[in-house]
Length: 285
Image 1 (cartoon, rainbow, N blue to C red):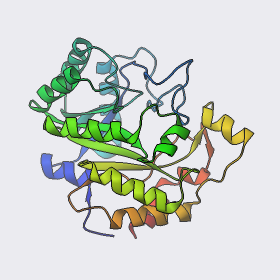
Image 2 (image 1 turned 60 degrees about the vertical axis):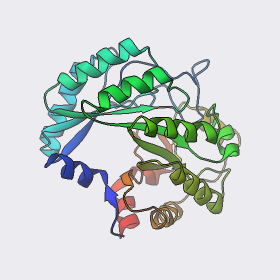
Image 3 (image 1 turned 90 degrees about the vertical axis):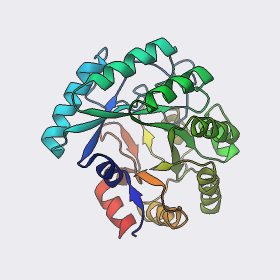
C-alpha cells in the first residue's frame, strides 16, 4: 500500500532529518482510575516506558531517552512525548513548568501531549495553544472506539460525543490532534469497527494510531478474560482489518502507528502482538 503519510517521513520532511519521540512520564495519574483501576485494558504503569524509574525527573528521562535514540537510530532531534497515563491531569502552572523544562533539553524540537478527551478544560487548551505557537506540537487523544457500547465495555468514562467535541476544541485552537483507536474489541464485529473508524476520521483528526486489543497482566481485562474467556483477533484478521482502514483513510492524514507494542513480560495475549515488524510488513505489502 502506498500514498499514505507516515510519521517518520512527515517529521523528516519538517526537520530535514530523523526525529525520534522520547516517551516521558510526568508522574500524574488518570482521573478515570478509581480504586486503582480505570479503563479495562490499563495497568498500573499507564503505558509508561519500562526504563523510566519512579521519581525520575523530566530532564533525566529526556537525557536517557536521547542517548538511546542516538545510539540506536542515530537521531539527534527529538519530540518530548508526554505519554504515561493522562498527562494534562494537573494545573496549568505545573504543566507550564514541565513543558518549559522539556523544550530546554538538547535536541528537543517539539512536544506531543497524550491525554483523554474529558481532561481538556479551556485553560489547558489555551496553554497548549501558547506552546504550539513556540514549537511543533501535537495532542494525542484517546477515542479507542466511536461506538458507545464499546466505550461502556471498556469503562472509558465518556461517550463518543466527548471525543468529537474535544477534537473540535483542539482544532479551533490551531493545534494538531492525533487520535487513538483500538481494533479487535470483542463487542464489535468488523462492520461496526469500520463504521467506528469512519466516524473517528470524520471528527477532523490530523492523524491516528491503531492498536490491536491485547491483554496485559494485572488489569481488569485479564480478570474478565480468565472469568469469561472471549475470542481475540488473529494476526490475519487484524492485518485484513487495518488494510481496509487504510483504504478508507483520506490522503493527508498522518499515520503514527498501525500496530501497538507490549512488554513481553506483561503480555498475556495475543502473543502475535510481539511480532510488530511482521505485522507491519503484512499490512503494507
